Image (cartoon, rainbow, N blue to C red; front, side, top):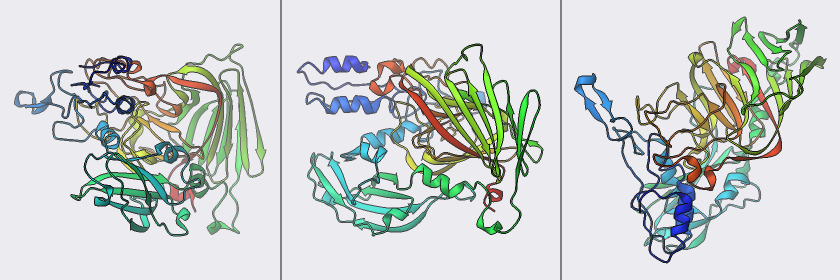
Length: 501
């Protein structure tokens, strides 16, 4: 059987015949293979007559052409089907497959994705998917980690303490419990990491689960006024001016200009230098303001900070800007959407020509799709700007552009200085620009919001060479918007050291 849709696979598994698809989820560029695999594999595992399957393919097959200045020729869309590039460069689906096909799995994966560390007692339930190896033959090593801060050059976290847990006796195909014996004060660390090593010494899988939540990092990073180091000195103040078109808030070297006609950021400057962030927050999906598009805007001084509030007659109904004396800009926005949506959230403009890189705390280092979230690891990551079209050209990985999962903070590096964004909210996706597709992408293409930088509650899936995303399982369905959404973002413009002094 070749390349059946998810529903087609469901139907054939209603029969009693042994089913083994000789090829499925045909890769093309960044589509297929890992995208949709979680749904397909859960379906296959749920049926005793399912015997496994083959993914196509392992490698992007390219030839170095001397007649094209040694460019790699992948013959249009015929050969970029793999999970690694022509020089074995790992692509995002490589790590997704490694996660989903790991022979050691979490028995309660959803708990670690949404509830950990609530009620965690140091016991991890595991499933042994090996056919012949008992987990007594494996090693289980844990680490308590503190993540690097945005105002440092490093990305690697520091190890607070580490240890090796006694290997439990879990027979092949059985479920059992691993006891980590963590120290009493383990919750003071930022994250818990657990690595599994097989009998031959190869790492099977590593999971990293944040102990601290997004709000903890926001409280640690964001200063509304000044740090204790400046106690007793003059407190910086905020001020505002208004004309017919805009309201301008200032705090020290930072100026934020809000458009009175749209309620969006029109311009941000630091020391007179234009930072480039503008035209947001704007609803990611198309939205026509109701009743002629009225915007009601007001501003006032509240203590040491200045407040601008915009009420908008559309789905994005409310935006509040609060500029603190420290220069941190707090943005609260509320929107309402219902029913199926390609993506959910808000966007800003930030010229692509200005961007040089990004450093962030979240799942990484590769981008994700709605149907390919697994495979990343929680940590602080950094990558320079690139315009890679996966499997088609440049082969610079990880790709810079795309959706990034569970972002707690991000520092966007631009030619005019960094822009740091922090959120206290869980499970926001950071979208960085719109990636290019390779030639004739067929189903292996996706959709992105207007604008350049987005903060999203839901993102789009990607299809494969022969099927659009909607035919590859439940995770590939549109986002089901549930009504009201409210989020908070904190922006700092300039070097973070000045925000923490």
